[in-house]
Length: 334
Image (cartoon, rainbow, N blue to C red; front, side):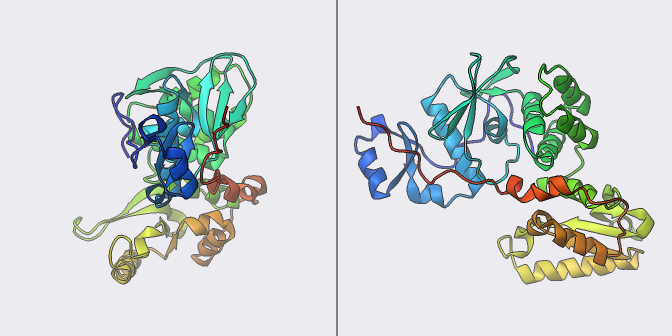
C-alpha cells in the first residue's frame, strides 16, 4: 500500500452523473437504471451495486465531493480518499465544519463540528484532514481493532510517518474523549503488518489471551534461495501463523486447488525446518474470534492471560458495519 501524493486521491471507480447534465436522472433513478448518491449526483445502478462495499463507499464520498466542493473530509471518508483501508461500507460520509454546532446527519452525510480544526490538506480537488489527524480520529472514535489497522497501514505506506507523530497529535487534542483508546493503538502500531487482516489479527490474538507473536519472521532454508517468511511466529513453541485472507483459496486469484497444494508443500517445508505447526486463518475466523482461538489452540499455542471480552464482543459489528440504504433519500420537491 502506498499513500497517494498531495496531487492524487483514489479515483472514483464508476462515472458520476450530474442531474444538471441528465434532465431525466430522477426518472431513471425511479426506474432503477440510476442510483442517487447524494443530492444532484447519480451513478449507473448496475455498475455501482457490482462494486465491493468499500468501493461503493468511495463512490459516495466522491459524489459528496462533487456536490459539496468546499467540504473537508474526515474519518473514514478521508481514509478512503487517501487509500487507507476501511471496513465494509460505513453508513455516513463524514465532513467537517468549523462552526461550534452539534454534529448532525442529513441524507447519508454526517456533518461534524470541531473546537480545534485538524491540519487540512488539499488533495487533488478535495480538502482532506491530514493523515496523522485521520489516524488519531479513527483511533479515538472507532473500535481499537479498526484504529490499529488504520495506524499500521499509514505507517507502512509512509516511512516518514512515525508513532511519535501520532502520539504528538493525540497529546495536543483538547478533548479527552477516546484518548485511552488512542494510547492503546499507539503502543501497538507498527508498519510491519502487510495487510489489515494481519493488524486486526494481532489485536484479536492479544484479546484472546495468547502470547504476543513476532511479525514477519523468516524461516531460513539450507541455501537462502528457499527461505520462507511467516506472518506470525511464536519462537518458544516453534509455531507459525498465516493470515491468508479468503481470496487466496477462492479461485478468484487463480486455481484454488493449486493454491492449496502450494500451501501444503510450504507447510511441509516449514515442518522440515523445525516448525511444529502452522495455523492458517481468514477474515471469517478473526471476526468469529472463537474460531481463531480454536485454530491456535489446535496448533499447540497456550493461553498466557485471561480473555479481554469487551473488544471481542463488539468486534463483528466494527468490522461489518451496517451499510446505508442502496440509494439516498429522494429530494424534497419545492
